Length: 149
Image (cartoon, rainbow, N blue to C red; front, top):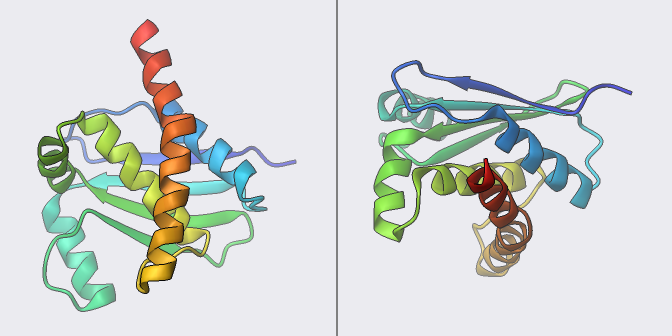
């Protein structure tokens, strides 16, 4: 069996994050949703990069917090691109850590790659419930275990 992994790339100008946090969340979400894919790519970048991607793929000429791109590769679920600058603003607005905001956006991106959407209110409600479940059951544990280090 192939290794289950989250492949993390971070713009060197941006804050550092632990690959293990992304890896642990991916393993749990993968198990919960019975995904047969083993890998997911995560790219932490800045507003200028995500703005270009948002224009190229969605024809929206503005930065956004997270984008998800499904993959046709056999074992790769897809790629998630997170804008750290937007995440910083949102973390301040919601009064929690940047790390928590980035991991919440990561969960949001994973759910998109697993087929969830929020275009219709019924779908948005289901996606929000899934996000809350993962946050309550897994993200809080990761944050607590990191505080013990």
